[in-house]
Length: 63
Image (cartoon, one colour):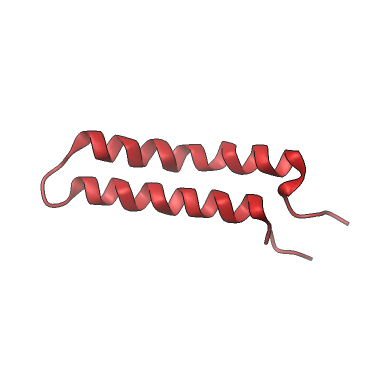
C-alpha cells in the first residue's frame, strides 16, 4: 500500500500548503485582500491539480 505517496499527492499538498501560507500572510498585520484571494485560489486549485495529475498517470498505483 502506497498511502498516496505520489507526485500528484505531493503536488496537491504543497499547493494547498502554499496557498494557505500566502493567504495567512495576506491577513497579517493588516488585511491585504488581493494577496489573501491569491492564496485562497491556490489552495482551492490544489484538489483539481492533484486529480488531473493522478488521472494522467502521476498518481499512486492501485494493485
